Length: 289
Image (cartoon, rainbow, N blue to C red):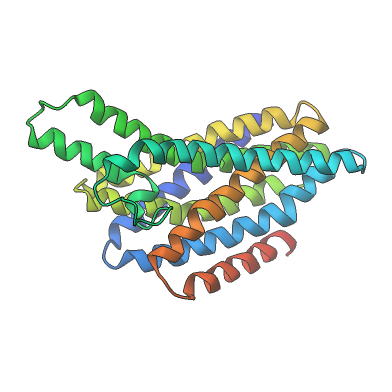
């Protein structure tokens, strides 16, 4: 099996199986799940923060001889990755938020419910209108709402795949084994994200089996991200640095712009902070033990 094919297989396990497992857990423990998901999202954010800062960015900085210009290149590409994911999420919010009744000027400027995190609340609004009018409302609007929800989830999963793909490309350049460790980390990271997808789907009336399967499918963009990350990473050291930096920035936005604010608003206490610390320390163990 070629390295590229192996990357695809490993990423599929980390993305689809990891997210699907989280979805299964979510539909089993639907009651009082928000506090559990809050802790798990914080934990996942801590793990990813550790991986980005102690592994991905250091690998990006080590791809070409030390120079001030290279440092600024990595910084710039990290900012670009962060900014692009932020802008795409902002565009989705701007499109969907006005159509959801409970999101008004007094609402927090970020998601405070699981349904908002994946925009299933927007989909449910269109589904309700479609059913109440007995199909008189355009089915295309319902379909578009479904696509928006899928795209919002993909924005979380795609950079995760880039992390895996770029890590395997780095392994080829350095002879390391960081790619497999990164796949394990992403797989663990995807479990709480899978719960965050399945819980609001079941709450919206979807059957548990269908919600679990749909949640697993949402992990598929991870594979596309891994293919791109690996392809760019094998072109040259500079492109590998770009791929690692961009993926790092994208993941930093997911952590600081989505996971942690959501976790804190779901459980307004100090608990998410402690869960994040545990995740960060677990990341250190994974990287250095």
